[in-house]
Image (tube, rainbow, N blue to C red; front, side, top):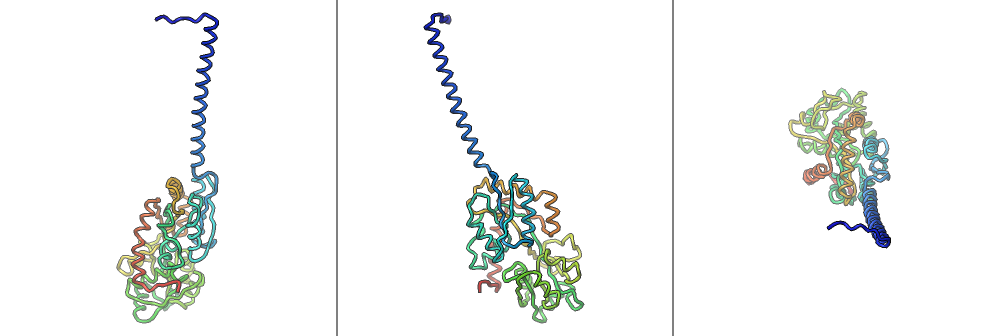
Length: 347
């Protein structure tokens, strides 16, 4: 059928009104769709992490400690990855438990993280009744960052043992003593593990800090001590202490002449403290993933790698899933060790 042309004035008026109505409906529909798009975009913007607020890393030790130095270097690198401020807050006390307790109670939004260690997250909660948190129940693991080895040291005196085998041989002949920076500290556990593995005993002498402990060791008031490389190596290098062995799986590049404990005792032995980031439990998975990727990217930064190397921090980068799996795997071994040992705190 041929199209009829509208020539009547009334017909044209009606046709114009209909066209205007269609245009209005189209415009109204477009406005609705645009509004819905803006709402969706606004929701995405609000959900994006971070949104300009600073991310806080809580360190359970004081300024200038190994954990503090490492956390500040990491925060600087992560701030570039997140394009947001990352700050460090020190909450020292109870060997890191005060800081961990604060983070466990924080809002699960990703803006408060714990700079955790094997001590604060695994061993002390197993030993201390004062620990009101559990690493797997109260935290969402974000990323493992590195492992720090320890070093077995004696006074650098002519009559001091020259090797770890010599030290352990003396332990079978007389009662030795050893120092640490406190009951349940990782140095204390390292010595206890070594003595247990080799069938020896010795008297534990706890101190409040590494400087006090190592000063007494250098003076000959202690037979040996196992402490962090950060605390001990400067005294080894200036000739006050003698390094007998390192607790890492392999020798350290900075002093390749010093054997590992495993080499010295002829059986597997590794005692390193890991560091990692943990968020409060129930932190959204997307936020944990964003933080985990930012930490991984930061650890690939050459400047951060160089700074970590000066602290003898060994690579141990795990994402959130891998870090959680590692926590689950090491808890049974520590429980078994404490069941066999006589280490007790809170007494």
